[in-house]
Image (tube, rainbow, N blue to C red; front, side, top):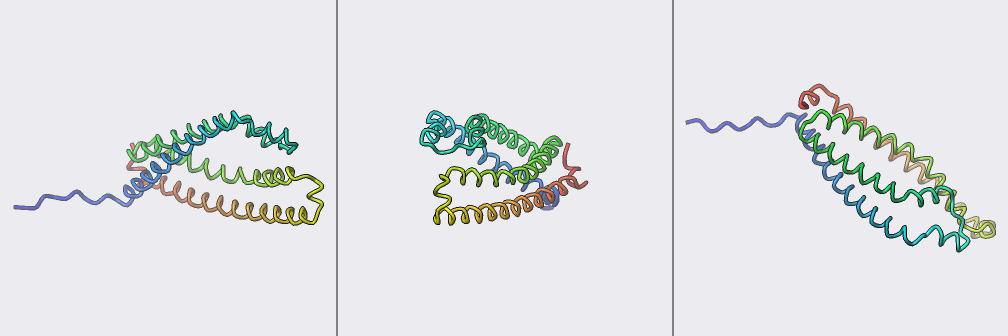
Length: 189
């Protein structure tokens, strides 16, 4: 009497795909929940007309803030749709579908590029914060201290944002290389 044969352990490539896909499924579900909450908040806050209230109080509203205010709901819905698309791609990756592997690679590359594309927006954000402060205050000793703090915050944000974008690009590049290896590609149909 021979004992029943155990199935062979999964290959390193199959384990890599399973772990990557499962983590991506969790991240996509969290992104969907976050996006749904964001759509809800934007819909509720949109009724408050915060930008109009800021303008009524004499606070400057930058063109970027106006653009975001005008497009907040559509940007939130776009984020929700992208989260659902990532969920579909992650599920297809888990099921070893070729379109899931290719879609996952596309998401990795686009996210890495987007991190670098958003770096210039940091400067505009700090300029917008400084523009909200009255000019006579900025010329006072406290205003000078505030400008120095804003400049330090700007450089800190640029350095940490660049470091994070480089780290994400490195991780995503590594994942793309692994997903393009012949042993991994052989698992997909």
